[in-house]
Length: 325
Image (cartoon, rainbow, N blue to C red; front, side, top):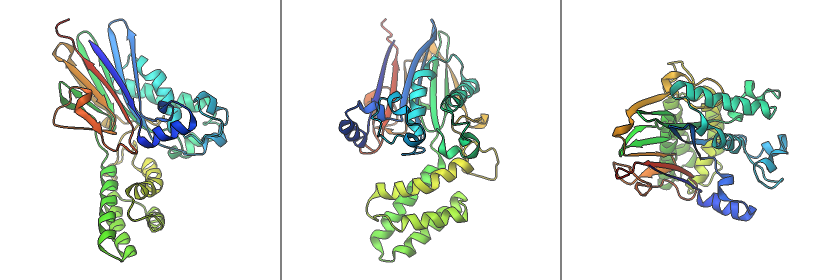
């Protein structure tokens, strides 16, 4: 067998790393982890972490810059902490399915304790200020291979996608951005366009009234022609709300609820598990949502391209069987 792994930084990360004099992967929240928990088992894990607590952790935990191989003045975030921890550990777990996801959550809980974040009360008060992520694992044994997935990290086996789910809330956020860009481009009534589309977004997502008001206020001040500025404004207001309200929520009241790895408990309904006979597998490809397929099938790195080269990171692992060997 052959294993290839790739960490592909965004253009923005590449530029920032050059300015700081560090390797680009140091600034990446996408990650992979590869290990062999026993002689006849190979585990491949790919995942990504949210950009939480941006610019604050260097103030709260100033000693961590050196641990992350960053300059002391760099204002890093908890996504980097979670990514670094998962890179080091997730590939070495022998567990699969719900047990693997529980192990991943315990890994974050241990990280919080090590960094004294639990003592600060952060872990109990506000998960939006902690590490939030998703991951997909391929546990390859001599007889069977088990794919375990939470969130929008995708797995393709023999070309076919078998795991990974895009969050509906993300689809709606992307639609809101597109609607605003098109609406503002056609009408001079900026506030009218804004309130109309944000209200539709509120109804579709069950967004709270106070959060909706904040969203309107923030979006009213952005450059109406720059997609990334609109995205950043929406992300800043909506993402903390969705983490508190939708993430790992088992209540059927919230139709857009979803699962994530955040150091709490990921409900089983959000964990995908697929078991396949190893002898039937010729290729496994794992990729974060920074990638997108060129076609219907994905069997190698060349079948994927960057979804957003300027801002989107990519982590990819490819396992291929050598039939002749």
